[in-house]
Image 1 (tube, helix red, strand yellow):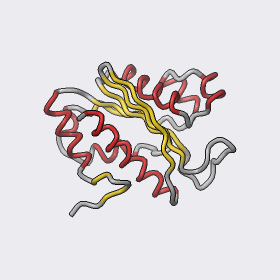
Image 2: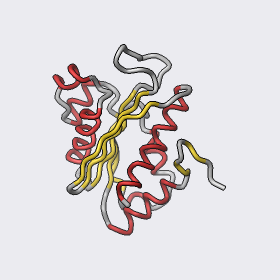
Image 3: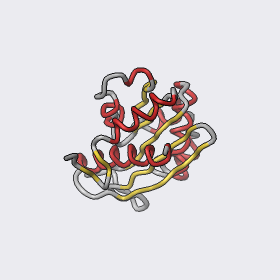
Image 4: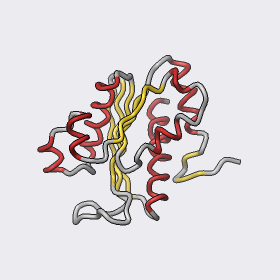
Length: 164
């Protein structure tokens, strides 16, 4: 029996791998609050090098700007935890790495970092692909580790749902 987090099965990463391998398309990832955990979950499966191009851990706004092309003024006005920033991170990682699909995760895992506008556990997701763009925001509860794990599982489930 597979365990779940927010409705996402642990084998969602295997299903993602199968989808990408069957279609010969590629994936890259831009992560902030998850610090590479999404990428780590992908590379646990053998054979991922045929579709997973790589990722960028863009923890600071400077890296989001310089590596992913997110405008600094947008980061200042909206903040790093916003749907438009998540979408631009996903676009930026696709462009920089040269993949067909990109996923971005940016948020506040806690226990600190909360602001008046962004509480701990707020996470934004961006997905881009051929003729496709999507962003959403979620609020997760729990410890830093729980928020990070829930973000990774939700990101995988979200991508898988949009690919189907």
